[in-house]
Image 1 (cartoon, one colour):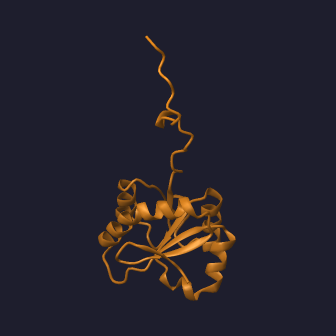
Image 2 (cartoon, one colour):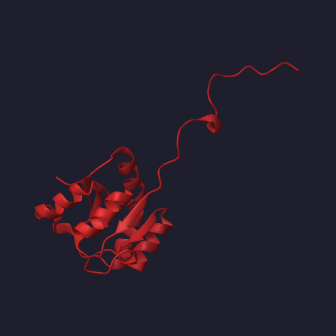
Image 3 (tube, rainbow, N blue to C red):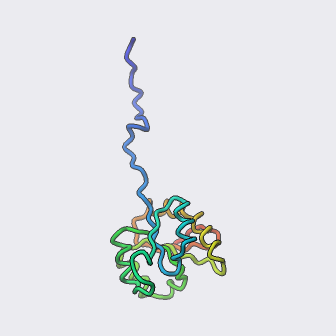
Length: 147
């Protein structure tokens, strides 16, 4: 039987492409709830919660430092961050990739659903950009870079 000539195209098994990096989302105090954590986990994200590491009321710089050192992606509901220069500076100093939920007056379960639907977009942005950065996520679930 003659030997098969290689096609020159590598198979998927021999491909050198790496699987996507695991996405770990860190819920700050404003989004730290069972329903949000469960919805994000069901959407394929690994989830860390502020209360899993610190007591409520922990200074932002403390938990931002941990999130940055672990390369966790921060989720917060602090939509006034655009007006708080010191908080933005702390995010950048910690090298944090952050997504701010700005979805107005919605229930906790609606928030969980919106954020879970946004996970693929969050994953794509994080794969393309090293950070630090801040994106907004509104009720449509589509992240937009903060100006």
